[in-house]
Length: 269
Image (cartoon, rainbow, N blue to C red; front, side, top):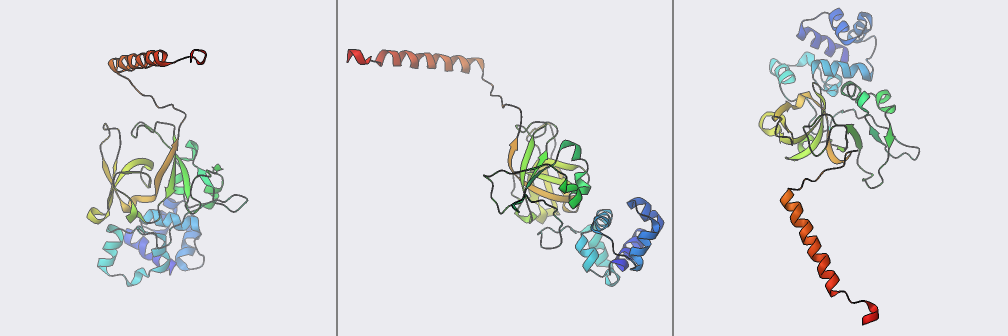
């Protein structure tokens, strides 16, 4: 089934086996073996095929593209092919500690660029630093992502956001912050608005008004993680207007003076 599907997809793109193998970093002989059913592609290569054709892995494995009508082909390439509800095969690589408790993996800045392609690769995830936060729920999956830029104050550049894995994208709440892993832009941290019913997209907004909102189609999203908290080395600053600060000091002085007046030493009672 997978071989016939790969052949049908390649022909729909009107490219040769050699051209596709070069694009995906495979040898022509190995790719030819997949199409002819001599060999089965491993998980890493299935992800490559899924990303290249922008269709979910489960369709590659389960569907029979040779029976597809023209309408089904159009839906495959233009509709929402992502697993919105998380009921199908969505690969989430994870790690556990010595007590078989799921770790919180931390994606370092150096691994940020590779996360878009390595997110489902157990070997990529297994080398990430891990830690535990005892106050988080044990029945949820968490991961920590690096934040770049100034688009989401008060979360500053260089901070790390701890987020909870979202399996069903229909549950994404309007106006709430999420980590969205996209195929084109990688890891982004934004306020999200769910537009799946309207145009199969999510609208991503920044808390910094300098940055314009934009939309990302569901087919271009890899993972969504709900904001839980963030870790930062920066101390949040509170700015006082000079008049407010002066007023606060005067009020404090008045309160201290009042306390001195009403205080009676024990020896004089």
